[in-house]
Image (cartoon, rainbow, N blue to C red; front, side):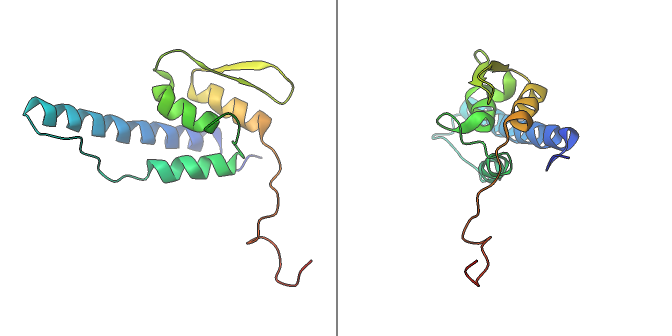
Length: 123
């Protein structure tokens, strides 16, 4: 069993895309009516990306597969597919949410103890 199901993972990624699309449309509207500057409104996408990277121990490349898929590749509709080498040495193209989920669940690595997980008794 995975920490997060494929269905839930897909719902999270799709929700993040909707938030980013909403902000992009608002910026276009502001620009159309001459609003000056780039308006950034708060959302939780950055925190969600960090959480997903932590859940899947996604520390590869510069930013990890989750961040690259969502931001660099615009949730799979951007310029080209992201390609990652899995734990078996095979190259994997990630162009859909399912591709990303498959890659992450296949390549998840066991967590190492963090200070908050260690007992205070010094085990």
